[in-house]
Length: 251
Image (tube, rainbow, N blue to C red; front, side, top):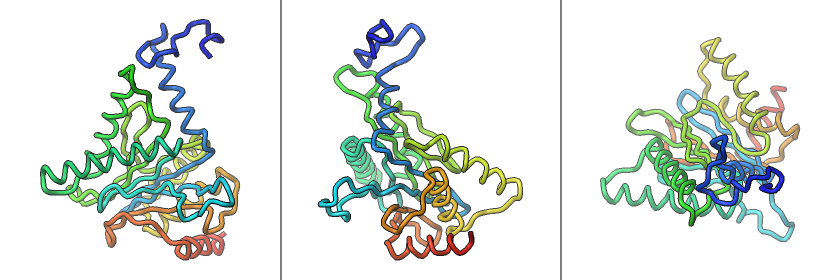
């Protein structure tokens, strides 16, 4: 890549190109797409949902040991998209930060502060020569006890953190974002607030549409928080099958 450009500005993480770009950080964004996974997050009135594909690389692998959904605190969790080894490292650090916060202050770290802390750590990785950016993107969701609302945040390899009503990560993120933008704008114009079930259905439909696939219950993972169940939890295969059946009956 460096020879193609005739520059060599991508040989070190700390070197800017004349255009002000950090090529190694851009390569980290491309690494997020390497697994061929797409993840979607949607925030409703009293809930937040994250949905991702579940791919088992080998038939000999125990499918129950493969997951991209991780619980960070009692009321916060995330879905990781990108390199799974980097993802586990980032999840481990996020859990350490959350546990340290609770030990020091005596209460759970809210999703907003946790996502910003993970973003700060990611940003440090872009300016230290002995480190490299992690090739993964985090969609963090949880129940914010201070604001008493569900929260959805995205943390990317550069350290950028933003809250979203709907977002995605992975190989089909552009198409998924366009789909969510149209659907959420329509609901906003109609002043319609989505229930938990409607939010789950929208997230599944977004993923199914951009991938042009008909999912089986074992093909996806769903994690969510709601006002009635503020702990981050994942849906079982039976519960996912129930949602897929409801979607099929509506279409």
